[in-house]
Length: 207
Image (tube, rainbow, N blue to C red):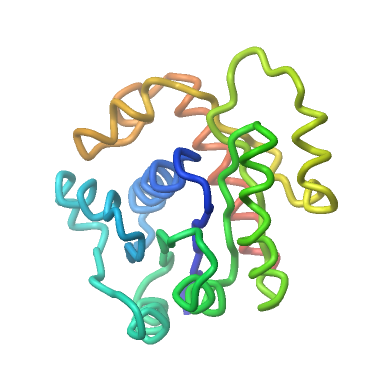
């Protein structure tokens, strides 16, 4: 059985889909069988995958009541199943989290983003699914981090060690169906994705 990872965040602009896409491409390049399931109504992941047309990744059309069965089926034939999920509390979010071995919550370093993460964190806790917070779109000079950590409360212990910066390469790559490491192989963005990938792999291996 493959590992199912759901990416969810209630607040828009946190980089949920961008993070998922960069990790998906990295796992596919490493020889993993990758499935993408886009449950977000905006369908940004579907558009990115359509631009990319990558045979190493399977985009699975799923919605509503089919989400749970589709995720389970994908996990039987893929090494990584990455689910782009709507962040608002819903039965669809619960279905994805219930089938997942890990939930990633991208969070910009602001108090409002920390507050918005609460519903996903609460859902993961209620369903007994491991969850990690990814600090994303971090500016070069970050002030007030302690306020953000305070807003996260006990969940601050679940923050991933690697973070992703607010880098142009991430947004530029998405509009052409590529990833930051692909358009800037020796960039800081590429180093950040590699570090994030390694940490998530370690978490999955220890599960």
